[in-house]
Length: 113
Length: 116
Image (cartoon, rainbow over all chains, first blue to last red; front, side, top):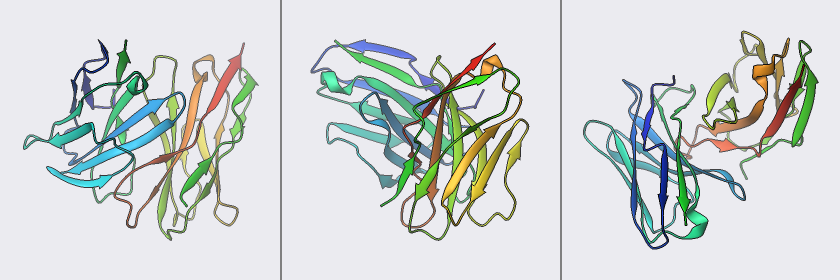
């Protein structure tokens, strides 16, 4: 158990819809990262938050947005969903400032029908 | 450009034998971390081992060791005494420490199959 909690585990929805993925980081971790894993793109970094503020942005589409709340949990919002958005979405957390590892949640598997 | 290359899409190993999974990296950052993660068929990402670019000794964690050769920009994972439960995808990742935020850059992965 990594200590990072992601909900829901599975999400099935239709094109054009909007979904919200939720992540609770490990206790004491201030940084939250979102990654997308798809068959064609592999594991891609989307966005990082540190203590409520956006720290770094990767290959995140404009249809996607995220935020980190005062209690440090984070949400990834995906809107106007397309078939190509079907993927496994991971949240990871770390103690920022430390060179050590990021610990991953179990992921949310998003299927767009 | 920051890049991780894993040249072995798939590997087979006999149970109880050792196996080496290859990883090379490219970065211009003077300081970085190298990581290996395991992804079983159930999908979760499990952290295995970490090596800092300034660490003098190769990292070890139980049956896992990281063969770090800085001049060759390689960070191979060695799994000793393979077990059936080691069958999984293995990802090498790098985290540059300057001007990159905290993101991990992943390779394409190596699928390891352990034969009984």
